[in-house]
Figure (cartoon, rainbow, N blue to C red):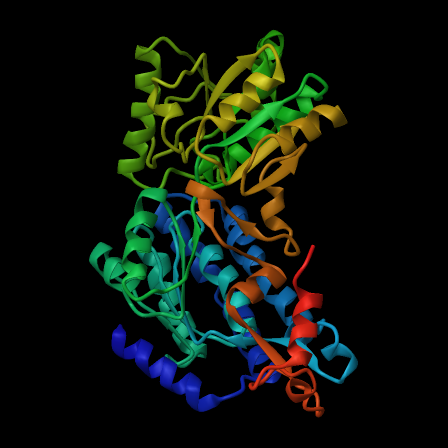
Length: 469
C-alpha cells in the first residue's frame, strides 16, 4: 500500500498543474463506470446484504453517486477560479494584490463503510477528483462482493496511479489508516474513528471523519402527525434503518403518543403490505447485527418498555431466508436500555413523551452531539428555539435525512458525530489546499514607510497610527 501511495504521489508531482480538462475526464470516467456496471453493483450489494431492494440500491447508491459527480463537473470551472482577496491599506492603493488559489493536496485516502458501500465511496470522489487529487480507497470488508466489484470496475477505467482500491480485512484497514496520505476521509463508527485518528496523527495526516450517533426527532404540537409518521418511517425503513442519518429516537408530546403509534402503523402499511418476501424491504446486513438488534429489543422488554412490532401481514419472522426485522416501536425507553445508549442502525424506534419541548431540547444537549436532527411542526418560534438551542451536524425540518441530498450544503458532523465536511463546493475545498498568494506592488513600500532598519521617524509615525484604541 505504501508503494502505491508513493508512486501516486510521484506521478502527481510529475504531472504538475492538474488542468480542468484532466479533472473533468476523471469525473466522466467515474460516472461512466457507475452507469456501465450498475447491475453488477446492485447484484453485489444484494448478495452482501442477503437481500437489498434493487430500486433502493439504484436510488441511494448509483443515482445518488452520479449526481454529485455531475454537479462537480458542472461547477468545476467556477470552483477552480482564484479568489480575489482584499489588501490592507495603504498597500491596496499602491498596486499590491492578494488571491487564494485552490491547489490539489496530492493523494487522498478514503475508508468507506458497508451500509451504502457504493455511494460512500463514489460521492467523496466527486470532491477528491474535482480538486485534482489521486485517491486510494479501502472499502468495507463487511460487503466483500461489492468491494471486489468496485475494485475491478474502477481498475477498468482508472490507472492505479490515479485511483487504487485496496481490499482486505480489519488489519488491512488499520494499516491503511496509518499511511502518510495528504488527507484521509473515514466514514464509519465513532469507536473505530478514534483508532483511525490516532493512526493518522502519527503522520500528521489531516482527517475528515463522517461518523454517526443518535439522530433525534422532535415532533412539535403543531405537527401534522400523519405526514410526520409518513416521513419518519420512510427514512427509518430505508435500508432497514442502516443509515448514519436515520432517525434514531422520537420525542412526541405525551398526549399525542397514542395517535403517533396508530399513525406510524398506518404509514408502514401504506408502504409495505408485507415485509419478509417484499423486494422493497432490505435485510439486516449480517447475523451479528441481526442478533445485536434483537438483543436491544429483549433488553428493552426486560427493563419495562412497551414493544410494538409493526407487522402488517402478521408474518412469522422466525421463518425467513434473510435477516429481516420488522419496524418496532419501543415506548417508554429510558437511558438504562441499550437501545438508548448506542446508535441503533436498524428499524427500531424508541418513542419518548414530553410535556414541554424544552425537555426534548435538554435531553439532546445532555448527550453526544448527533449527525442529524429533525424537527416537525409549523410553529416558527418553537422551530427556531429547537434549532438555536441544539447543535448537530445538520438539520432537516419537516422531513428526515434530506439535507444530505443537497449538494450545495456541506455534509458533516460535530464532536462525536464527526469533523470536517464535504459535498459540492465544500468537498472541493476540503480536498484542496487554499494557497494564499500576495503580490507586492512595484513601489518600494518598505523603504518609503521606513519599515527596514535603520528605523527612524517614519516608522514611529506609522506605529502611532497602528497602536491605539
